[in-house]
Length: 252
Length: 215
Image 1 (cartoon, rainbow over the protein chains, first blue to last red):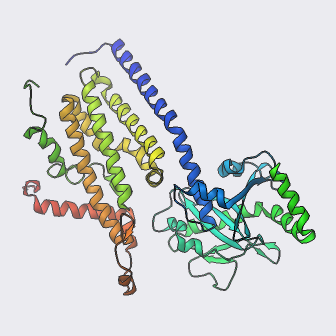
Image 2 (tube, rainbow over the protein chains, first blue to last red):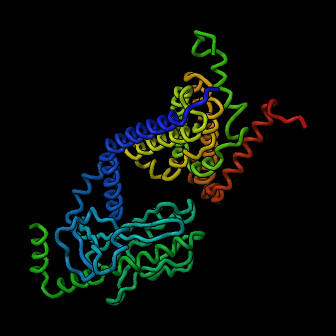
Image 3 (cartoon, helix red, strand yellow):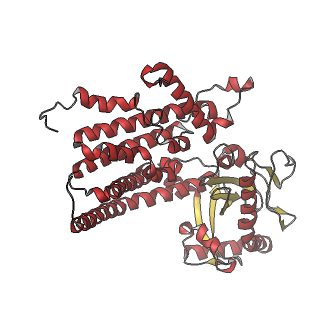
């Protein structure tokens, strides 16, 4: 077998590394727009699912434009933050910030003349992050729809949170009880009172993931409390004008 | 490497392609690459894409290493192999993310873990480094296909018994569930993949006399 000098080995490895780096960066750069697009579409599909609109990767964007009429971010005091693109907000990064600095996205949709408020939730399951979107009805308490997703929960157990059966339990539940925020509790499977508006069954065998959903809802939804209160107040005091003002602000 | 003009599909070359499917199957006979066989075989579709990705990575890196075989200094050959495999895997991963986003979501980290699939490095080291590109290409295809076939068989049974579906379509009729049939939750968990692989090995050895040890 030939023996190779050190110079040759160094030269060989340098050329190899540079070539590989060049190939990979070209590939990454050419494919990046497509990947970004895919992620956006995926997010739009999730938001649409939360208001019970089924979409495919193809028609997601069109349906999104059709149903979601507004998106904006609010802060933890309930004030609308101008100049923040709600859709681009990364919940993981926001939740790492102190509560006062967080930008909390809100999406508004209209279905059959009823308004829904969609808010993202983000938390941790057993093996990794879990997230989802909760759509609230016009009263800002009744859950219109819910969608959950996860990165790496156990298939058949924790991963069941992204099944219809689990998500449909949330429909019609309420997060405010006599004006007090209570969230919807995810209890051990079989323990939820079917008449209660504030409880759902967890997943048997997926206790930690269910608990994760429970915490995620409490944590994330409670940050919106001030904003929800404000909308409700505005609504009850002077029904029309304030709403219009809000809309005007958006359209500026 | 003296014989010139060997036909592309000579019996020797064909053997490279067919042998790993049965007699020297990477999973059932050489018992390599078990880890990924456990992870991605819950459903048929991801298993199929995983198999396809491994075929691509393996065939291409076998050819690349075979082309480089006269220039690679033996002292750093393992590193060179790793670099070639790793960059192929990243390319495949990026490609999936761009064009098959749903599936890349399901495969998530496992595409990255193709790098650690011992079959690939084993073939580079044992075959590609000392053979011409064409046989190396066939060897890569054959071994990856042998791996993929097992993956797909395992996934078929796990999806059928675990979820009652094939390729995402419900195949077990609703009526059967009404009679009290339930999907076997255990099939979804990784240990059942091992048991299914074990069953495949059992069937294979019973059929293929060459694999029965004499002692």
